Image (cartoon, rainbow, N blue to C red; front, side, top):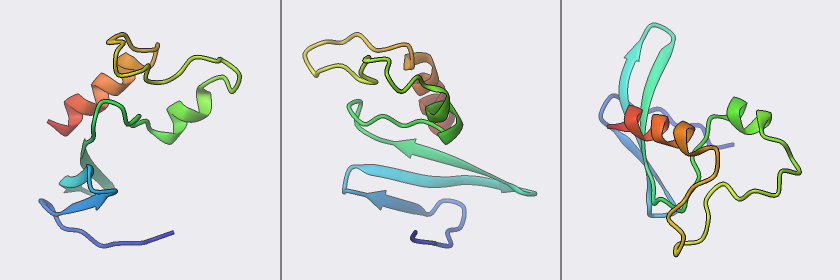
Length: 83
């Protein structure tokens, strides 16, 4: 595990195309903004843990198909927080 210290406004870049920005700190909470391509699933671990392991449904469908799985509202919420 890599452990980093960041201040508000500073970013971490993963794989050159995923940016995690520290938006706000308050008490024991940190607000993060995540910018990632639509093909990269971004989920909180507790949401990922609730997903059925054998659902057979992809989180994100192929680039040619604009529809999304049932996780689209969750992903939209994460993106909204990042804005």
